[in-house]
Length: 369
Image (cartoon, rainbow, N blue to C red; front, side):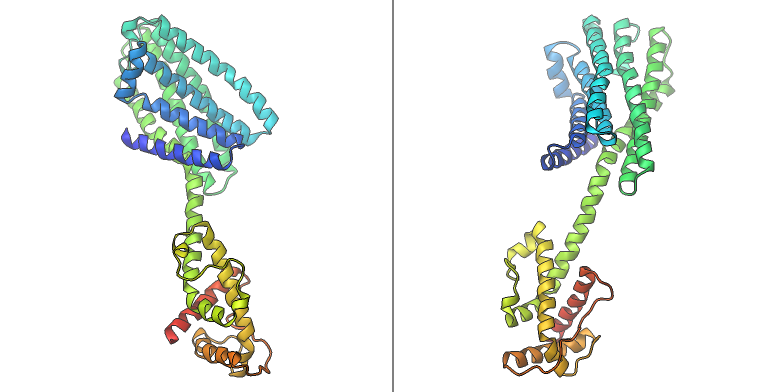
């Protein structure tokens, strides 16, 4: 129970952060509201909150929990509507979907008030289903959940078939969890009918429902959060790669920067500062600047390297041995009679490939001393 609560908290915080970044995104707003309603509904099962609510009016905790659960599923429907259709149609259909939700909420509210105080708000496992108001309470809520879960499960599976990883994995997890929730509520409606007619509910049916919910709730949370988390993991890998390359270029950049300070781009970072270690967004910007500055410096010193016999395609160790003398020759004002030389070129035309060649040269330069 506490593990599920922790998952809910992490998922809600993540979606609230995303919503803060894009406050006008209606689909994101809907899925955030869905998670918040689900989390608050789940929290009413903790004894302190349950006792506080039932202390107001008997049965309040159960009513609030079920209303929030129905609202969560409604917001899930709204999320799919805003994701799959245009804004005007989604808004119209969202208002239409509010009708069955309102009917279900009205029925369970009336059923709660009509139920005797002694049987109100009991957990489903100990509910007195022989009392008509109690049976109607649960059947109204569960019938709406069957409709909503089954509908969204079909929509989710349809989206999953048309999506690619990592989105498809999250969608399939969500679809499976929704289908499990729909099936669990179908079983509960059957249990309500059995109990209302005075028969004993089979113990195996209770166990199946408990298992379906135990698997479905965490899968639902993970499924909704999985694509965003995987994208952030991929972004972190790129960030780590750029940070490592940025630091690896340090020896080469420092030497070229001292020789050609006028080539420094605006706001280029000073090497070794705490910003290099802690900056997140700035790492990519600093990485690009350092690669460009290193390449510019090598182009300017390449005629002096050519005069020393360096050829195109020279190995980093060979280049490292000639780079310092070439820079000293340029600083001394010696004329450069050779043309610019293409050195440390990447095997493919990409900035990251260029950076790898420059890092190899920088490593060789640090080793060469």
